[in-house]
Image (cartoon, rainbow, N blue to C red; front, side):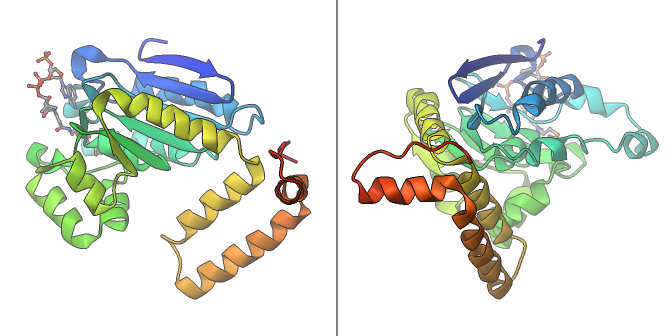
Length: 255
Ligand code: CAA
């Protein structure tokens, strides 16, 4: 691995972006390595949560500008540049972004592709692509608008200004803000909690919450109710409810 450092502790897989000379800029090689690591683990019953993080100073300062700068529109279209990130976004294992420092451009978009964002107090978020003569290209105009609303999204995308962690939390972008040195421990604790639950109920919960961003309330509630009914076909539902009634810790098997 040239661009990542990977660690696994039980069901939690931590991927650290590691291109320090370019502030973890997201290159094609980095995306390929990220998918090489996570693709085989996605759906592995032993893998319960992925944590994506950067260094103590930077999460990622965006897509790699040097890699992109000389390309033509025809090159971008022919490669369907950035389309590979949709595979990362579509991984079914829950993902947590543990963010210290800059999460700009593609870095902010990567964080938004995760299910939770745990941010340090000095984290900085933004979509500054307008300053480069372009726009966000890995879902920034779409995911940011859904997460923080049109008013804030327009402000960030059109001015290119950044947002500090407290503003990002107020805006609804960030799940938790903690002291900088607590970012990874907090993210790992959340990852272990998620991984301790039944895989089917976690997958169902993610799908239903994300559905809320894509559908009307009536259809979303119906979808949720059908998924809820379906979980009664799992052993984990029987075990979870029996454990509660017997006042013991459940032993989920993912079946
Ligand atoms: N791509 C490539 N290289 C980058 C980079 C990026 N996104 N961000 C930083 N670097 C490189 C710099 O060129 C510099 O390299 P050299 O030492 O060889 O000059 C090195 O990383 C350190 O950067 P700075 O000297 O600029 O560090 P700084 O602390 O002064 O500033 C910063 C930090 C404010 C984050 C600044 O680096 C910056 O503005 N980076 C670019 C942010 C940006 O525009 N991101 C959007 C990219 S486009 C995108 O992401 C499109 C999309 O939607 C996917």
